[in-house]
Length: 108
Image (cartoon, rainbow, N blue to C red; front, side):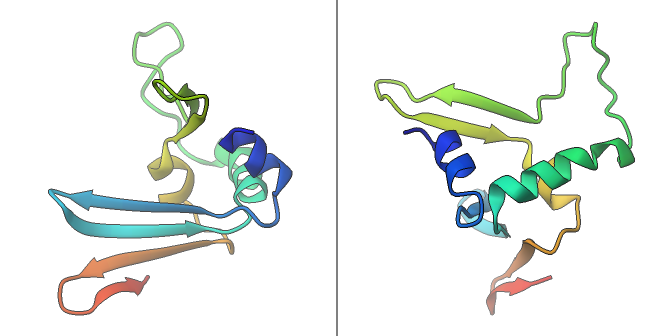
């Protein structure tokens, strides 16, 4: 079973953890509880966000979610435009953390 099917099947119990780093140094961490239900809620609210600069007929299309087969494996990866979907949105099941060299991650 691939990750997308697991996320849909375990909608109340599937968490998404996003770590970003720059040159090996942690920058931020986002925890998305109830990932499928949260994603559905965020997607439904996209109409309230500003439109992207990409037009349908251009070669620059803003992908929000993609599925990618792992090379030489039977599994899939879920590719998510996490800045647009999770970082820029407020939701009770999204917790955001920032990294500080002296204290580690702290909740925003």
